[in-house]
Image (cartoon, rainbow, N blue to C red; front, side):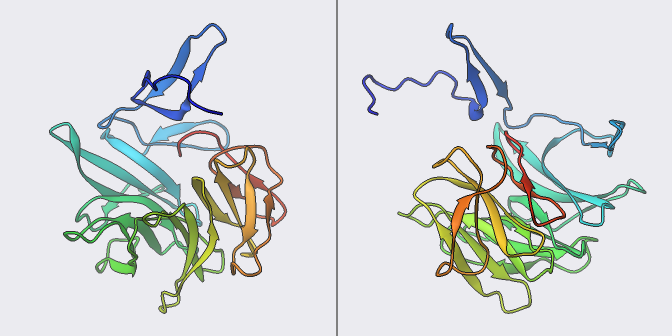
Length: 262
């Protein structure tokens, strides 16, 4: 395939996964400009829903805690038509109370530890520090701690059920995307488990911790790889339909996915 004519942007404000085109040339897309005001809503299995907080904001990346009692979510702060900051909030589903975690810099993409006691997130705090991984107690006590500092941006995706490993992805300068794990036992040992020439997303542990499901633009299906080492890494399709946000089921036999921004 080659580009025969000059590329002309037609939907610069639309994410690729939110746009669709008919055979007649009509486009439909979802537009989410920075600063969009959203309600934060909890929906149960019956379809009943309720607002978790009365204030509307540009909420992103809602993540339920493994014990189902709280939700961590990012809220963007827009100033003078640009991103001025982002904070991580934790909401208690039973009481409605909420706690703001340490908010220096832009803090995004929260992920719960398996015991529901801590929240891992990306942050660009510190002049010239880049985007690194931090974690903090979910009740807001204490201060945040640096979990991983590497010479490229890092984005957390999942914690193994035994609480030993955090999966994250990134793209070193001049290289393709990769998936790494970092130990959560205090040693902070980092290991790359997958490299790619394409764009990788997701990276979710299977319940037994042996596999990572991920999405890649190199193939139309979800992929699975060993969560332990590159040397013994088998990689192949996961038993699921194509999507961009894999989630592991409570059994280690299957995974699900959702197409679109999470």
